[in-house]
Length: 265
Image (cartoon, helix red, strand yellow):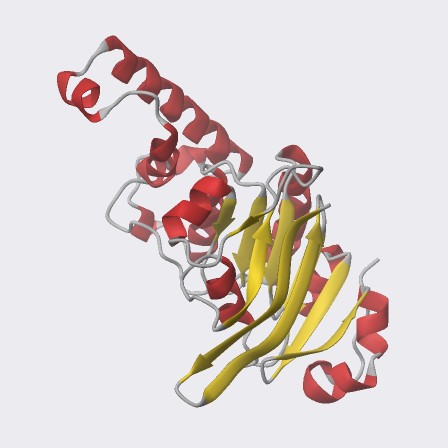
């Protein structure tokens, strides 16, 4: 059973159809790319999947287990409710808490799952301290995975751009998602950083038992790690297939890729 099943979702802004009858089914453990020209509707799709926008048509079903459990429609839910169900995302424009420390940016994402209540937090009970210590330890473990643990006390805004990208992914993982949406994770990274990120995304998919959907313009990353690619143009799906199939599709070449695209190994 699919982790996510978007059925003919559409959205209209005024008289503009930004996305029309978009279908997407993600099986458990898949790593899927969503590509297309600027303005094709990719981030709009992400915004519908995460509750930032409500579709004007269609439905979105989510099954955290990805197995035989009942699916749940997430249309109409707030972003925080969708996050609590098990869907996390990063953003095209980095949205860190820039004046908080690197460590606190990750710690804050753990807090919706704490076991102490507001009164216990105010009174600083033993449960409060136990939970906070556990959160700090788990946050440090995430920072180690992204090799930024040595900067845990620095302000997030002082990190290099590539490390801010990594911090945003680490913060998303702190919400314990089953579906992770990455919006241009390699933006602003140099070729070596992009290469390292490619392996890191594959690693966290396996380590955290994730299903991943990513938007990315760096085709070396998309072709190198995605098992399946969905191509949007003017808000409509024009192709779905493996990297090899997509790189040879005439409609995709005309709309986006251009000549001479090579698939990853």
